[in-house]
Figure 1: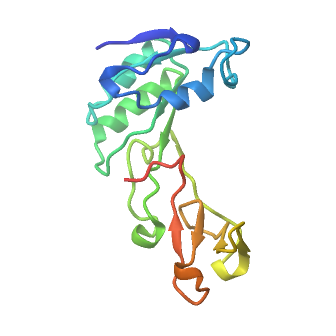
Figure 2: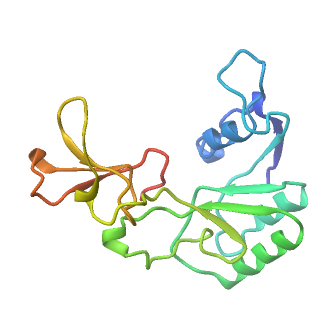
Length: 185
């Protein structure tokens, strides 16, 4: 198992993960006062990197926890539950590490929120997603963009950024524009 402890300003996307998770690492711990971009929320923190996989045991995450990681972020996932993985998460939690995982934002119209993804759906994991809220119906918040196209935003239980209307027809069934920060499959 390869574990790297690197400064955020020296963090280079690793070949074994094709840079996956790199932007979240930068948001969390990018160095300030270095002349590049903006600082992360904890710009004096260190980043551990690892490959992902081992979905049944999460052994690489357990190893990160014991190496001193306080927060473990997972933007990957599967719809398969493994009891061995749940036990690994309890071990990570009991060791003092917090896990955060992407919920994978499947379209609400398709799943009705009934398709869990893991590790986000395991006990003791903070699950993050991009879901609109506030209005009960798209018609309750119709807006017009700079090109005079109609769209709706902040519609309850819709996973996405905004909703558009085919051919700018308000009587048509709206479609959902995905969120760029979401993890759609």
